[in-house]
Image (cartoon, rainbow, N blue to C red; front, side, top):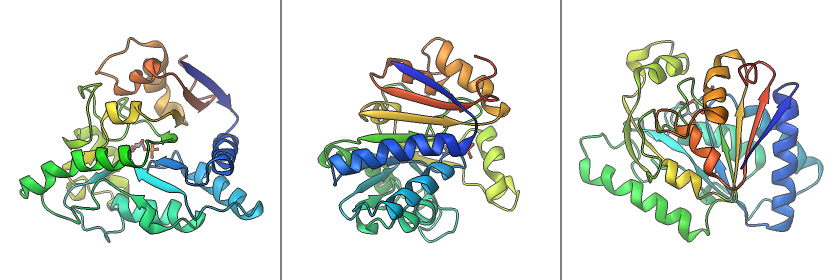
Length: 251
Ligand code: GLP
């Protein structure tokens, strides 16, 4: 079931996410958080960090799994998702870095040509999530083409974590993090699959601004189809989509 909540702005969305995760951690101190990169979740992480500090919530046991990672960037590259998750989530929340994982962790910049290593990383990541007992709350952004994680249109809705080629539009969208130079954006990534994401117990998708309106409408009101990977959320028992007025404008 998809529940759509229209909010004033990213801060109001962030407060909702922070409230939900704070009460989860109180109930379950070793909660497993599904983490996303991109600009959409940033206010949510800020609000959660503020709440953790203000209410002295013990997060020492909290575990985390990120959605995706570029292939070919060393872990310490400032735009590797390993670095981004560290900067935006692990440090501000005070999480134990050893308990937070990114699908590329085991690759550490291995090139795509290191086929065997790259091929094994996906299944190993799904196993690690299963061993942790599954993800409790998975935060998601959405690409302008309806991708979640890096599951571009055409991705199997049953997919596990695996290597994908980035759509050119996604590389163009993400060039802003690479000096505006699309050629610096990696061509491949490793991403949790739609099947992996759907196993999380609660999905919270955040989208803001008119650029996301089309993708949000397809996600909520379009048919369930691999052409809009986010539309799989319609089949999830507990999915919450939090949008501002602009992102909701095509609903
Ligand atoms: C990237 C990430 C996605 C994210 C998307 C949208 O492609 N891999 O997980 O949802 O960007 O980013 P933003 O939230 O900045 O619009």
